[in-house]
Length: 108
Length: 113
Image (cartoon, rainbow over all chains, first blue to last red):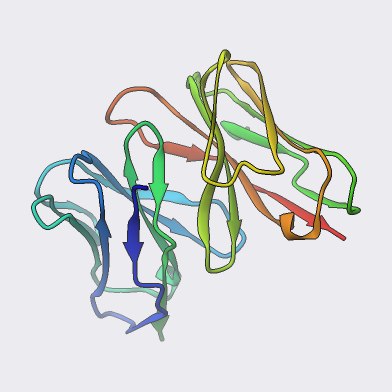
């Protein structure tokens, strides 16, 4: 059974600080990785995708991938109250496997 | 209009009743999925389909069935609903290319009383 592991949180971060979210996956052959944000009762929305080792930046978000360590992370710079949500890490093979999500709370 | 549409968005049904959740998509994707979400348990895959003639069980298929009526339509049925099937259900689609990701419908809240 392929697995994606995340710390459930909640992770509390002061407004304006950097939030760091982490994820590990079990299938060494995985090639495609995604971060989704989900507000309570709403559908997940894609924030970032990453396919190669290293960093990928998009605005305030940076995804980091280390395939040797089977580790994916998401950094959110200048955290805002609107970033308070659950963040889902996902790994694709013929379907997409999701972690259980990390709840992030930005403290005003 | 949403690319992935689920109906109904909310439904309360009684134990033992049959209920169908419908999903249609305009993205032209061949792959469609049904997920269930419960607090603390994340998104769990119920069934998925790669085309009209291809149906696959996910990790929690017991008590559910699906029908892929057309490339754009994928319905989920609870033949005899039970209270622990109360959850938020998501339909999703994905293109077959390796760089494609998954797109979700808005979700269907189902309560079984």
